[in-house]
Amino acid sequence: ELKVEQNPLFLSMQEGKNYTIYCNYSTTSDRLYWYRQDPGKSLESLFVLLSNGAVKQEGRLMASLDTKARLSTLHITAAVHDLSATYFCAVDRRGGGADGLTFGKGTHLIIQP
Amino acid sequence: NAGVTQTPKFRILKIGQSMTLQCTQDMNHNYMYWYRQDPGMGLKLIYYSVGAGITDKGEVPNGYNVSRSTTEDFPLRLELAAPSQTSVYFCASSFLYTEAFFGQGTRLTVV
Image (cartoon, rainbow over all chains, first blue to last red; front, side, top):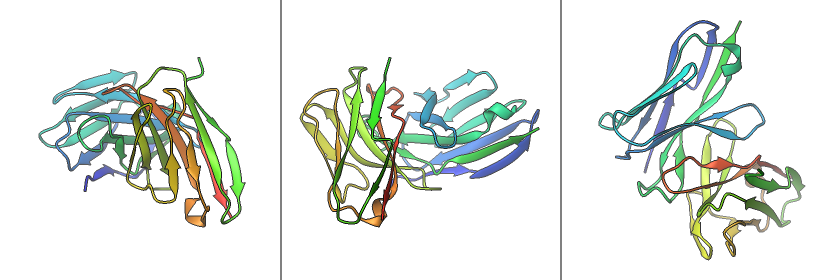
């Protein structure tokens, strides 16, 4: 059974600090997705990582993928309050790309002034 | 640009009742999905479709049914609602190997 594990599941941090969220998965997938969810809202795509060594950056967020280690990281630089949200990583459920995603439980991030 | 539209947004059902959650996308995506989200548990795949007329079970299909008669529409049917089906339901669509776009969700309570 495919497992996707995120840690930490809960993170409270101060504005201006840096931190990393980790996503480990148990399959040999070359693709990994990061989503953001605000309370009571839908999911918004952040990054699509399609190969080993992929690195993508958007503002204060940077995501990377190491398929050999089956690990993705989401790094937050100089956090600001607006980044408070729940962040999910997900991988292809069966590796084929068309069969849906398996999600981690999410990392609930609170950024305090 | 509507994207993925779900209706209704909220619904309260009594045990044993049935209902259909509607989902429509206007992005011409081949792939469509239904997920449920329970607190602290991430999202679980219920059913998915790779094109009109083709559907398949996901991780948690029991108690649900789907159909895909057109590219745009992918309704989810709940038969004989049970308290365990209280959840937030998300419909999503995508092309292959791209990010999925999610609807706004349907918050369902079964009492």
